Length: 117
Length: 111
Image 1: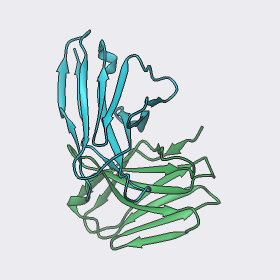
Image 2 (image 1 turned 30 degrees about the vertical axis):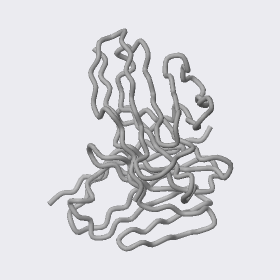
Image 3 (image 1 turned 180 degrees about the horizontal axis):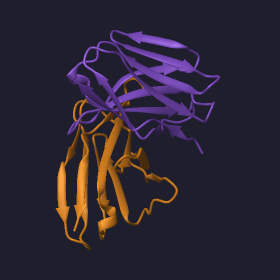
Image 4 (image 1 turned 120 degrees about the vertical axis):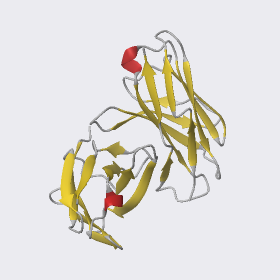
């Protein structure tokens, strides 16, 4: 099946620094990728929809200047958490839809655990 | 907006059937999914059902949809230790690819 990778899988950073998370579709092209945030014992929260070659669409309440998304190619989307604070600590998951495949299915990355000290 | 509810935990004995339930509020949901999340791994699509179906069976998995009660369930027959995971239900409307998620149910297998 289609594989989505995320890098890094785990990152610890100091408050005030920026962290970049990469999401790659390894064996398919993804025009659309999604970024989610998962809180403990809570559902996945969609943060933004990332479209290749255009600006991301952010969900209500998500600060686009804080969570910068770049989808520069059909296989790579990046999420940069700028000036991270402890409340940004969370599990971030990306997913990708195969541009040439079943549009019902999203393929998910393994997630990135961000801890801000 | 859409609200999707799941119990946080389910404990079953190995070999028994597991039934994971999900209730939702938006009757316009067109596609209803079940995902499995194992520690350290990505979300894996287990199965999905269209809103015009009542039941779908795939080997040990049976999905039941009661549209009147807005209730979706996932039954896992002959539950094995490898089934230990968090199971999420997710819903999608017809007009976009965004999914609305439940909080996930952690399936615990007792020997």
